[in-house]
Length: 443
Image (cartoon, rainbow, N blue to C red; front, top):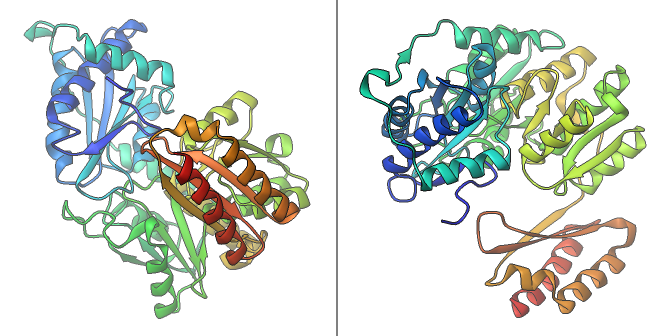
């Protein structure tokens, strides 16, 4: 088989690409691989988002775990970062989340966390794929695993988040878009505990409406509601709540780069930014890079994916990193991107400084960024093409210090993404489309 795991676990259309059989096999493979690494009878935390397919995938996955001799701590619907936290808090061997994050309800996914609450490295995922192709036999029925009880796991997660706040949110009026996802109960409860006046929207999941015209893929929705209600801030989560975008009182959308910039400056000013360095990906805006330079903060870029951001943070001991899409990792408080924690930190940073979130976001200027996706047959051919290299070089010369060009193959589709940043959107689009035309011609 081709590599089954993508940048965020196994994902596909539920029932066709992601089947009950595959889920059972993944559960069995997880126990097998954990056994190879010295965990004889693993205990695995299993949670999901509210997609209808999550119910039967949960049954299939837990059956595979149990038949292989592993025990299950079954949480039901919980945000992805809550499962990462609970895995560590409950001293479990691993965690699993059944979720397709920001994807439509027809999709679903299965992603794994280590016992340390981090996403599995590529090597362990490769071992799981090998175990799928050559499965170990089920253990004898008397040795099948059990569904184990657990107490107060969510409450301890919420207490942990409240403890990460920099200041109360008393009097702050906040609209939170829960994307009809796994944050629908948790996010409003959390913000109210911090003292905010909360209006929750898209917080009524029915199994089919997750991410539908709402959430972090549509931050303009919460922005419009903030303006309509005269609120102070808006928060927009995706379906599994591992990211957050924001809107200020004027309805301006605040992306992950701006949140990361404000939090980096806040930590730097407090003397708490390890190495005076922040980690982001190649997609982070050039305006973010310039703002960090102006504040004496170094920027380290990684490939796209919060797992790669975290790997670099842990490798070098940095405490803050994230992505433009709203995944932000506060390493002193979390092992993965956590949209709920991001909301706590960003909103309370504003409260602690007597500022609005719009004022915090103003720490950086966001340069216009245009992305053109080009469907290709041979992505390697694009990378080695002299014509493409020449087109990219010409655009870079024309932009000078006022812009940036990035070509990046998609990790999940036969696409090459052409991204250009420039002083104006018109310039960015013109250069992006010119390069895309050359890519299309050679591919």
